[in-house]
Image (cartoon, rainbow, N blue to C red):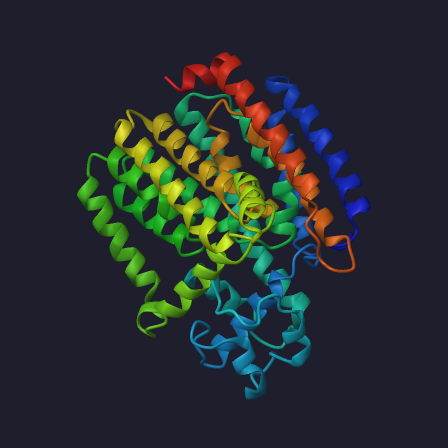
Length: 412
């Protein structure tokens, strides 16, 4: 399997896969759906047994899981503070692989539960990888089922499920590289599907579980709340579920540590940002400094303002409107974000299945160019690649907004 630094091999194999994927999508309803879905599931199953070579996040997953087995709250102490405590499995070799040993863990409780289950017994890094990947695989199979059911409910072409099912980025990054967006996608889809069937409590619990895997579905709650005729019950039950799920943080009074890691994410981390890259370039040209400490919060505030605009504009009249609102919000968030790793596109991509937008498909292909940053002896951002990536994406988005009939009608 290619390593993170093997850019030429990686982009060549991915390019071939993506062109094949684009050809299949171009066939529309003429391409046989069920053989394609079975193939998508089998490929994901095969990747369960490969070690995630394109990401080093797994080492923090294992570290946190070992901490829980030792009775230590992973939110309470830094890895650098725990290295000398002799926690079984948390060896200097594992510590050396961590990409953030001086940061508190940022992974929510449901993810921590899977870390715990993946580190039961002396099974080594590979064994832990397989166990955790089985959860991602199960979530992906569930997502494919839910996409199909939602498409039927909305009266849309079921072959649109292939947008997500066969997307090479999704296959490689979620199961292949063990990213927990797989869980978030599943629970958001479950929240949409159960709400479409008027199961208010199931929907609110599903979204809460999605938040407990990754925090992002929190931004969808205002739209679910406004859409639901039982809004008060929805938000109350969601809040109750969220409090219960986040008990490991709340009871241990570790909310400040968790919040500190989130603050670092917005105020220090940067990778493959879009609009942020333009503002950072202008800011550095004017001031001579990297203004991420200020631009990060400004970008987050911009997302909130856009969400409020969509929230106040009108009440979602139907499920399509609700999904569009969620899609606009998550897409705006990533356009304005300082950090956009390839696997982050899983949630906007799956929501795009139920819209007429296709720029996100193009983005899911171009974003893999960001792996060029890892191809040097020391990590190096290649800004020209980012300009090319986002320039093409924004141009195609403009084309869809102003010239594609289905997209224009969807805005009305």
